[in-house]
Length: 326
Image (tube, rainbow, N blue to C red; front, side, top):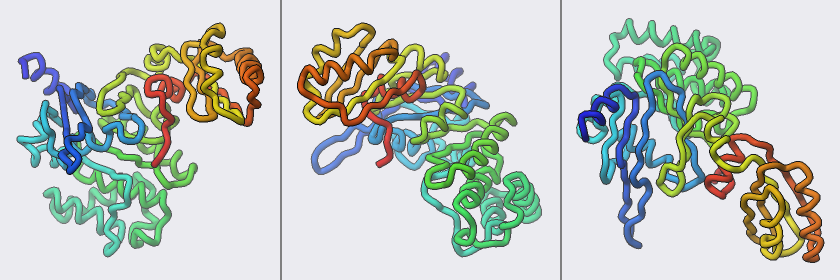
């Protein structure tokens, strides 16, 4: 690492250079992450997005010391994730998608025990737990077991527990998965407040709206490679696809591609089975033309959808794949 790189890493909450991870399987080597260069500034709300299998989970695993990198470097809170694992762990909070709350103790006890684990005195742990229970509106369920509270309350408790030791960086892996929209919006507000107070947050999510609402900058990865890193506006503008139109025909869509590409404003067209996906500079009037193209090939439209310019259309243009949960 050069002197400039060391300075950049020291000033950043997260800094990676040529970060790689290759898994060795009975069928050979499988590259999960290769050559990832990423910088997350202190106090930033940063999103890490990508299709399933893009390398997000592996990247999160390396940054939180759960996965050992194959090559390259990664620093979190200024510490190398391979050589200074304990220092990294002391400075991060992690909220996983799966519920990891202790089912044998109450919410309050779970927070206090986590505080003691990170070196707080009994008094400090009780005080800190009380502060977080109040801030996260968990007072009424503080003495309940986790399996007796709602999904939203349990998720808030997980975030509170991750913050008990005042971590420098908070990692959130699908934090609003499997909770209702009202609980999701409530958690969004809490996360905004945390970030406004200076908390650095790295978020992975399958909800593109969530990333668009919360994140100042977003990185999109696919097949272990960084495709882009910018603000939502910057990604949308640079993606080259202002509108995405998807048509499902009653027969193979492939014959319509060549003619579709000749239509005014069409940047790209892809066919997969009976589905035709079109990336265009504008959507006005294009849907009608595509229906005509299909009809000229003896195809009837069974379904059609138009996505206006958004993070979702930018994502589709960059990866060519739908962003869906497994």
